[in-house]
Image (cartoon, rainbow, N blue to C red; front, top):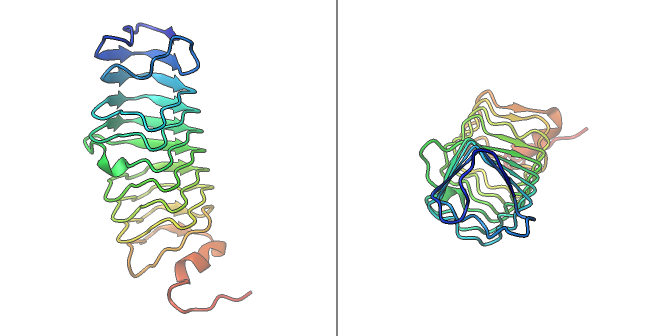
Length: 200
């Protein structure tokens, strides 16, 4: 476990500027209450209790946080890269200064219901059956992401980029999609509920 200007994890409330590895033989999980400017690599945090913890300007790489408990957890400018986040309830985390970015992550069955996530990037992610209902995703990017079965209901997608997203079904009558960008190949996902037939 390498650290730069970092307090020891165990027994301290704050860890700063640390590179933390879950593969380290001395790793005992995330014991501090606040992590600032830290990088987490290869942590297995499945079903971990992360309630009330604060992560500020942190990055998670190749970690598994599936079904972790994140009630009132704060994610402030946090990036997830190549992480498994299956079933994660982001709708239960702390909303103050919530800012997230996802690259090549598995987000199946996660929930962002009612979250304010303007300009959030979901790059090359899988969000199958993910709940995006009532979320504010203005100017968000879903570049290269699989949205099969994702729930869009009263979702704000104004200015969002879905040009290279796939497998989505979005009802224009039940979502706000003004100035959202779609490709011609994605028209079926927009018009599927209207009864309009799209033919080559």
